[in-house]
Amino acid sequence: MNPYRLSTDELAKKATDIRKRIVVLNSESPAGGHTGADLSQVEIVTSLYFRILNCSPDRLDDPERDVYIQSKGHAAGGYYCCLAEAGYFPTDWLSSYQHADSKLPGHPVKHKTPGVELNTGALGHGLPVAVGLALAAKKSGSKRKIYVLTGDGELAEGSNWEAALVAAHYGLDNLIIINDKNKLQLAGFTKDIMKTDPLDEKWRAFGMQVTECEGNNVESVVSTLESLHAEGKPHVVIANTIKGAGISFIEGRPEWHHRVPKGDEVTLALEELNHG
Image (tube, rainbow, N blue to C red; front, side, top):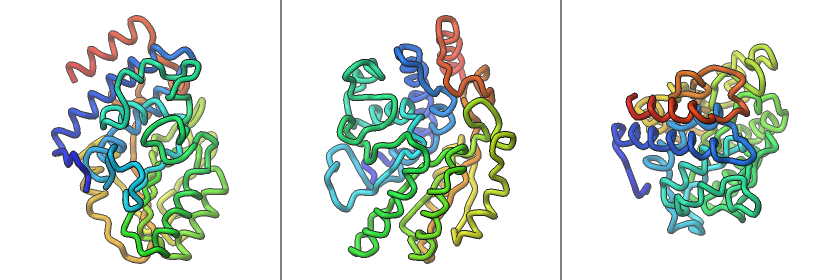
């Protein structure tokens, strides 16, 4: 069971707290960050770690814990802020993000950061490993669930679709794939760089059970994830989000893929979050 089980009102407040941490974290990083991607996923990872996942900081080696894989590894900053809030490591570690010898590198590394389940960053790696873990759990009779968060641009990687074929073939209904569909990748819109729509039809054609939610609304995320039932098919949740969600001058703007707030932008962002 999740140790927090926060209400949706509490989750919304927690998401705001995590957004504030993301702003400060990226503004102080010596190597920049991926602000837009960090912000678009906040309600998803917050709902998972503070309500959904059957895992906790004191059960890192429990073979029955649920597993979360951050396949969109470039959004490590937002992921770290959530892990710190959830108690997986001290919050003062966040000030070392991307510094030399930091335990919080630019992409997640399992043996550096408590709570990280897989090294990610090279896109298209997370889902194949998640499929393997879900298959192993099925074969061993484990009740654990495997969750994986993918990004828009990542779905251009063929490894994801090969993994989807395997997942459907073995009926891995303990696998939950969440697409953070913020409709942007790198320096432009997904529809212009590598169109993936109709995404729901593609996943269904590969044998998935597909649901959609408002990915920046904790009530929508929670109700969707809690309504999933094992029906012999892997689950795909298309979470419709806004890149840079929560900060008006960052939302939906391609240039914030690898840009970080500086100076007055930090003040403006924090003021907006404090009064939002």
